[in-house]
Length: 471
Image (cartoon, rainbow, N blue to C red; front, side, top):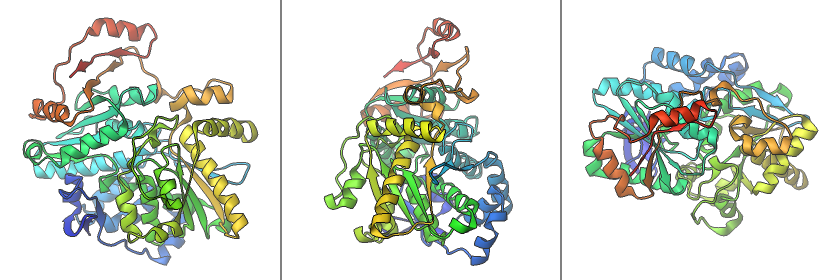
């Protein structure tokens, strides 16, 4: 399988090069040259396959022979070692719970898969690799966990200051070692712009081999297809014919992966792009044109994206045609007040706890199903993606449900926690200089701190210590 750039279809590379490079030099995004149609016999067998077995069947056309068959089987068995429940609510909708991995968010699928894939490619190349990733919350957590301690790979995570939840910040700043977090005084869009600028900087690339762990990297999208196949295979036979999937949408990697799965023959009737106030895609589908704009902060922060990178891929998969996109995807947006009401309503009436992103997806699903019924369209089932554990957003969820949430161990800082974040302005030149200052590939540069005092603060029961540098 070869991979082409959305900016130039003649720019084709292997999986190894696409993953290692992350972003083509022409600022496009890589897509598979073909999306193979899976055999009907496989769809008959899917309900009997385990998640790793299913994942192998889906991934093999994209990964073999760049990755040998036996290596791919071991990789998916290692990565997918947690459950993937499909929970039916009292209203008949189904929540696909993607938050049972190590960092309690759907990003564990892509980050763990990518970490193991890259580790093998880097070993073969003999050259140290630096992963650059921008995060609005859960990407950073999953990337930090997935790549921590991986030999030959350093990770640099950019996140917007004050715009991630405390639990998310803890998970992406706790590691140290080969993981460094840069706290950017700006928005997620600033972080993403800085990362893209680094990939397009040939001078920097000559000194540090860079790749991306964001959904701009095709290695993130391949494993995100797995759970669409798995969810479909676990639906009752009677409702499997034409399900509708509602997807919390920020950078649109999740929805793009679903669209790729549909193009491979998975009988998904349609998708709902569930947006918060960062609703440029909803406006686009309504005929208002595509107009990126600065993101605004919401309680569903992983969706706070004003210029979704994967819009390029959506266009390419739909032949750059608005009507083709509309035939597969609808979109609805909801503000924070509606999101909070949904969390409260579903908890009170159905006994299910939504996180803010799942709440937006549930709202979008309900709205689309009602509109479809009026228009005479039929969906056999409605599935919404629950992308993060509600306890990651206790500040939002607990006031609505009227009680405290149990906090999973993965979200509980201990007395030894040190925040390893480094402060940077939203200025690419400062990121460029910081990366060159660590050009030996080490992510353990000296930081100034009163570590003893901060450790004491952590031990006394606050959120944790801080060992930080302002640059």
